[in-house]
Image (cartoon, rainbow, N blue to C red; front, side, top):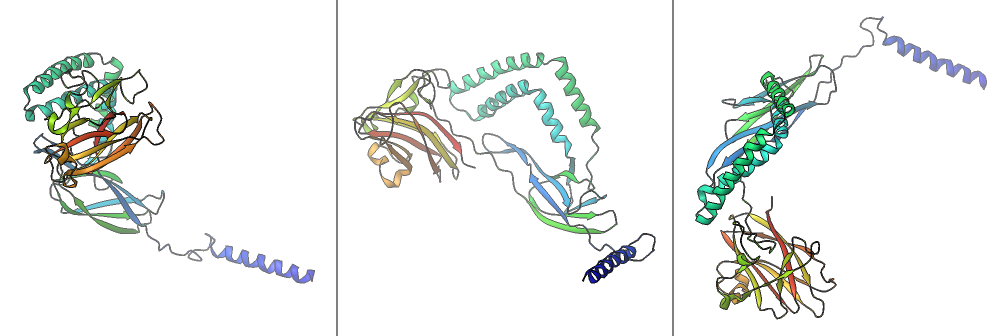
Amino acid sequence: MNKYLYNIKYIVLGAIVSLTSCVSDDLANVGDLEDITGPTPFYNLTDVTSSEFDCEKNELWANYDFNFQAGSNLAVNGTMYEWSITPADDVTFINKDLPILNLKIEAERASVVAIEKEIAKREFKLPCETNQAKIDVLEAEIVDFEAQLVAAEAALSDEVLQNISDLESQITALPPATLQDQELIFSFPGPGEYTVGLTVTDNLGKSNYTEKLVTVNQAVPTIPQPEIGEPGFEDNSLFDGSGDGRDSWRAPSSSAWGSVFQINSKAEGILPEGLQASKFPADGTRVGYQEIEVTPGATYVLTYFSAFEENAFGDVTVSIVSTNATSLDEAKLAANIIASRTDNNVGRVDDVFKKHAITFEAGENEKVIILLTNSGVESRLDAFDITVKQ
């Protein structure tokens, strides 16, 4: 038996030696199989389009930029890339490092950039503002921020200024982007459909091609976030520094809607925000009413906090109502209710506020009413906020 095992071992060893000799570099054209596997190209793209519109939603400018990054199934073997674009008219190319260097400059100028943004916000609002009191406040704030801007620029240290200069020199020295770059930014002349192809060639000269149809969409204005007056019910929180915390929440007719809510003060740290909240007595005779501007077709998320007394059952309702309603009774009609949420005091703890959210669609409305009502026990609401749902 051992004799047979001994013979088998040497037969296997001989086979291995034989196979090894077939791929020896010393034997030309023997055992070397041709590599017929070419690269498998692919690429990723990211829409980095930027644009600016005025307050009347007229386009001021738009850059239809897309970041393209090529890849393949190969690792590091001298792979070459070649992009193509159809139609190619007026398509330009940007070095991928340019936006990175610009962001680094912004970071160095962070204190200055923050003030510039505050000025830009107010300059954006001015042309379309019709309330003279608000115009006066915006202009005064711009003057104040411009003075802060001068001081912030003067306060930039020599080290920061040198860093900015170095980054600007790097931008100047950037080579132009080419269709042979693995990663680059395509700047399209406008909306449309473009065929972007990629050819990948390996170090053996083998290549493959892939392409995608890229749709460049028309730039659209950013949906503005609605403004809620006195959202935290704090004194002096109106745009001009005035207000008793509830001036923005008074209905146009107390006989049709009910009297405005009361204000409840608490020590710091108890309320979700500030020192004051809205208070609704148990008899349900007080309301909160505020019209806000919305963008037709947009979807919004309204958030707020509630708290209750616990001596009996009670609830509080926050509704989004159409401006077609001219009274509290009409606001309760299903045809006028856009969205509504009711929360009660079951399981609640005194002075512990709970956060809620309502998602609603503006539909064809340019304005809606935020309506606050309660019943059963003293209830409080605080810290309203609204965002555009993306």
